Image (cartoon, rainbow, N blue to C red; front, side, top):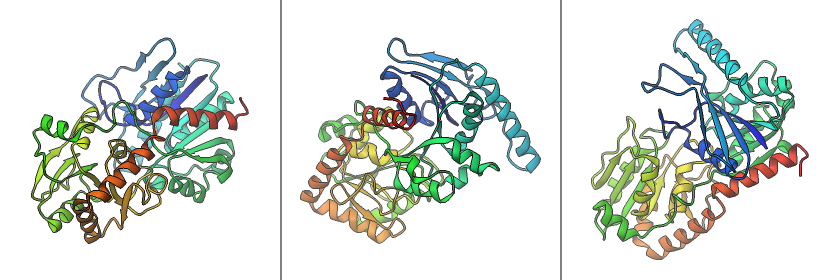
Length: 374
């Protein structure tokens, strides 16, 4: 099939990590014999590196073309925002003129790209699908004036969690019959369980210590400071904090703190004993799924965005703002080796169904069903 993707960002030489999960999905779909065209506008004020406006990679069974129309975006006064919006619309219009004929459908990440994709899909009479995985849809998307037309035109909605499905329905963007849940997935060749001692030796980490891992922005939403406070409360625990941001953890026992390229993260996760992320809002957290694939017991939020991947078989779910609960969960895993092993086995078992190849195939099957293809 020929597929057009609309996405607000896409990795390239200028930025290898932003929206890496979208590239991962596109690569998996292309690898199943499909021709993929990705429209990803970029703000020229954000990047110092040269961004090629059109890139092609892959050959034979999987071919991908990326179109990067540039636009200028300003923040501040309303008239500046109007200029930014008009610039982005012109950029998208220019990019879509380069798209080939014979496309089978349009696929948009997320609802904010969904409306841009809707304008193109409606013009070309193509089925439109939207993937929703926002932590907060309303912070990223302004409801269109022609909401009823937009809602009717969308053929199907790929939801990463029941939270995103329910929020999309409540906002009047879609109906339940058009939705199906596909939790985020991992590249199993990159994220898988490794020998813990070997990883610690490679990184120069102590072999006998209990080590907690955190991956995410250092901010209030992800909870870096809450994890830091919980570790201080328990005491005597080493930790790894992968990320960056203004709310840096400052507890004792930090073995590593800072940003890492995505392909370096599995080594550090495999060196840890458990993963802690008391996040306040997600679609479906990639970091949680990646930690599960590395065989880590999970301590995370008892909120609906986690319920499609986490349960008592692989995690301890806590109230994310309750530092005492987070500390008690960490203490339980530190002191109970049997519990750690049980939750580790559960995490690995769940992660087996959350590979990117499986997710790509399931999404394509859903799309084919919704557009009436075999």
